[in-house]
Amino acid sequence: MARLIECVPNFSEGRNKELIEKILDEVRKVEDVKLLDYSSDKDHNRTVVTFIGEPENVLEATFNACKRASELIDMTKHTGEHPRMGATDVIPLIPISDVTMEEAIELSRKLAKRIGEELNIPVFLYEKSATASHRENLAEIRKGQYEGMAEKLKKEMWKPDFGPDELNIKSGVTAVGARMPLVAFNVNLGTNDITVAKKIAKAVRASSGGLKYCKALGIEIKERDIVQVSMNMVDYTKTPLYRVFDMIEREANRYGVNVIGSEVIGLVPMNALIDCADYYLKVENFDYGQILENRIFE
Amino acid sequence: MARLIECVPNFSEGRNKELIEKILDEVRKVEDVKLLDYSSDKDHNRTVVTFIGEPENVLEATFNACKRASELIDMTKHTGEHPRMGATDVIPLIPISDVTMEEAIELSRKLAKRIGEELNIPVFLYEKSATASHRENLAEIRKGQYEGMAEKLKKEMWKPDFGPDELNIKSGVTAVGARMPLVAFNVNLGTNDITVAKKIAKAVRASSGGLKYCKALGIEIKERDIVQVSMNMVDYTKTPLYRVFDMIEREANRYGVNVIGSEVIGLVPMNALIDCADYYLKVENFDYGQILENRIFE
Image (cartoon, rainbow over all chains, first blue to last red; front, side, top):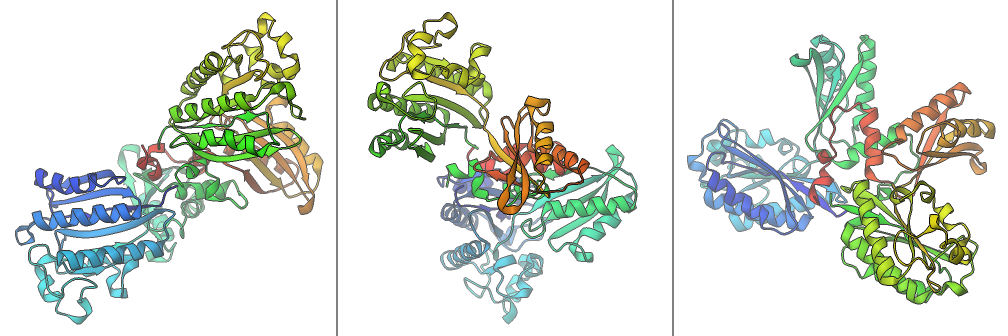
């Protein structure tokens, strides 16, 4: 398999279709970068774009799109329901195949430096790229939003990692960071008792003592008269899908409830599923290089 | 994922390295075809080559290699332990991704026609491409070997599918056919009692009433003091790995024996493992298109 990273930048424009297309074109025109998805929300006035490719190409596409956004979007005029602080609000870089997290962090630093220096935009590194623990969480960085950033940047603890120390009035502030791919994974239970789903969600999620890279909620699926443990797996390499699945099955059993199915929502990295086959089949010494498809693009 | 087929031609030369390289070069020089593996056996006097790529490119590489083999190998002088009937002895075409078996069969017919007409070699279609049930099994087609082919071709039931009705003295006869990828899958048992492995192998394999696309043997792994059910899964889409694994676990349990592990030998198509994750996690409505890696080369 080729070296692949995914990028999911969020731009602060969700209404002007023509403008959005100009930003998307910057991604489309970089060779060997594949635009996978984009969606604009008028209320949020925000567009989320997903593309994938080899690291250097993805950085190029991201920088160009960010540059174009800084030319086209004027943050002094931006309104929308979603919290935001910049024309390009946030740029997550996600290692997909044959790229380590360390390499993704290095790539995020390179991109952040270029945005800071060439576009004169203050840039914070966040998530795995953060240079201090109070900067890991995007919500913390963005607190105060665009309108509060001029003041916030004056504080020593909010000195940007790259770019000027003062707000870019037109383009605001951008956060860049490496993170793991997120897998949206839901497990359906053979009961309509919401308390069971809520108890199991509490047992498996990190915030209440469960698995470190699992976020979970118990919810009702009314049209099927069942309940569901709805999850975001934020690092499948450390908290694998099979582990949370087995744990839910065991907890459900304690209430006399069966797991009746699961759902993988949206895109999932191949290895998140390969790891499950490896686990349940008890495969000894499996190597991802044994997967035929991984051999053709190496 | 791109449309991919794999080709594993067998050439009747395993000793003359220079000659073998000339055949391999025909594969190497077709753009976007990836030579995955090749191995020559001196006793067999035979070389097995594995490559993969988009259908048209793979057909081109295969035809060119076959043409070169017909120029370089003289079957009147061939000796070797492995049964053989032609310079290019057999050409299996294997659909890997986004190619149906029907399409692979059509590709095999196209290739067989070209070899027959342009190289003047009698060609039999075999396996899934066979035009009669007695031609499905390669061993049946090859019976009598090169030395018996001149006589065999005179019989109505052995009239070739393409090419001349008479033996090509220098190049012999070639078989071309589409088949499913084969997965070599072994399951290790927590006992050194070979009778248990043999009984389980008998239960799961097609030839004695078990799963249709499973071939199995019970063997000893002396260095680990265990026994193993050693299998070739000849169509994982119809007899999936998880089904034979679960069946072995259940049969082993009947003898009070645990499954202690499994092995996937060599290359395995991604979907053979994805199907296992889908099964054990009870995923509802999974689509291969949800695998991120499948999106980049589509």
